[in-house]
Image (cartoon, rainbow, N blue to C red; front, side, top):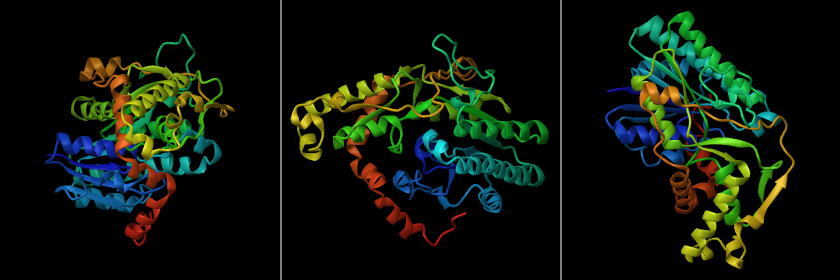
Length: 369
């Protein structure tokens, strides 16, 4: 039985990891530590909050004493470190939070792990650090995909902060012997994603009849990974991955932004054609008045330093761990749209801010970190 501390476990990928792990390993102890910033939502953990062996702690990864206490109290043997500021646009307009959380916060986690595991208990352990393909920079149209040996060339404050955290994790392995691993993933999508990101933003804007903003010419390319496949990749790294190893987790699924938007539009049109109840639930949607969702596409000024293309070569994961994505984009995007339509109350509470009142009433007197 493992005892796992999941940082950022109320965020998008972290919450999906919690659901995945509880499904695969229900006897394991899971402790979630989350600061509940704007993107952290404990409502994403409602289905597991009363389960035996699950613990939620409202706190900040910058609080080293808190982390050390959790590691000792729950006899944690594995840390899966998701907690991070992750939205590139926000990093451009306010980089300080990214430096503090992604760099200083990760270093605080590493110091706590070193103190408890190396200077203290000496138990077998793993510190798994979740990073991004953005640390590698931007690819040209004909460039081969990123591998684990691609030189780092981050182009935004977000990716630079993640690159720095990657180096810190590596250094704690080589200098102190901390048992670490790192994964660099491509763009995730799926349930519980905050609606500032492309795919959920397009879905909710269609439902509200609002413009669908597309940066520049829309030809920026990303590799898209269904979040459950990402979680399974991390599982394989924890079980089979080399200590000190770095693994790229990708979806083998490159799409231009404009083609993603157009696909979501077409699938939403299909949903409205198939289910007349949607016309009543979402009267502002273009389909209600006989228009196609594509009519809402609006090209906007490109963001500064917008990387042109990311692509992941996951050959190492496939060869060493047996990792192959189970979801195609066709199946994953349909699951995502279905989840959004079935969980309107979740994303409406996120978008109108009402869930913040719930947070304040439940956690306002708890540690803010």
